[in-house]
Length: 380
Image (cartoon, rainbow, N blue to C red; front, side, top):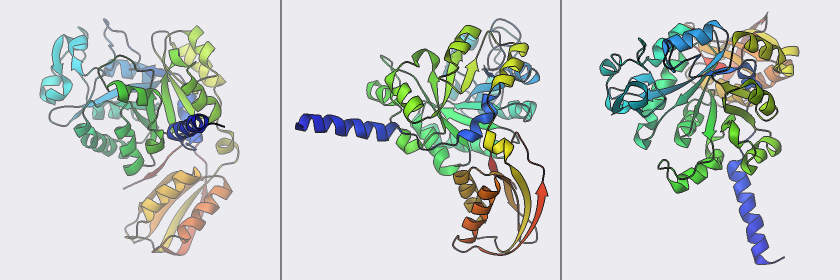
């Protein structure tokens, strides 16, 4: 073969390695597959429940829909829910959200309604774990990435419910891979062309999901209108990547793309009865549901001040074990572990083999498995 052929094959191999997201954690996405996800809540702009408003989120939660929402930083580093970079479309105010304080934003009315720009913390409190949340973190400036992610992670650490984050910005996804590996993370993408942000080269790389080798997303959220692209087919059919589709606008469209996407983010057409029917049709994680055990453990020995909790989260993430871990007041570690018996046995074997950890005793109690749990967290 000629040098040109070798070069072509070499470049193709490099490209495939760049867009390969890794093994992912598909079983943990099951909570988001069971129902339709309401895009920016169950909203109607021009009515009393506009997009990304508390009224729209309340309506979605009460009817059992999952919720997709958009989170941004304010000038005083609060997290608010707003899709656009500026308030021009939502409120007729041509100012960037990042330039305004929360005191200013809470006076803004959305789409001529009585609803104001909500705080992310208020939305989490209102939903209270009733439905899964897909949280898109919006960031146009690289310098804001760390603060945005830190603030979001702080709120999510204390939240009891199914959540995942997604972003168009690879550095946001990368931050969660490094600092909150237990959090489910997704890379948003579509075919970018002729746009100012993120530039021609950046747009091409995002279109191809070429940063996957750095971010290792658990799922890809892609524009449903572009499911025929080669890059999409490779991730879906070759790598068997978990795919979330945005934005589905009709029942006919939902039916036509159901084989291409695992999670459907929808708006306009969704209704309560359709959601119930959808929930009955969606797949459930057979291994986690049919062969799952749950155990409560009190572990004694040299288990505090040695990174036990961090190591437990890392190992649980690798194995697909769910549950939680925390330190007790008597220098022991308390855990609830859920998975197959083999998974739990392997997790304990790995913990015993970790440097500095010395497990001397384990008090173990069998519990009833939690069918809706797909995450392992540190509790405080």
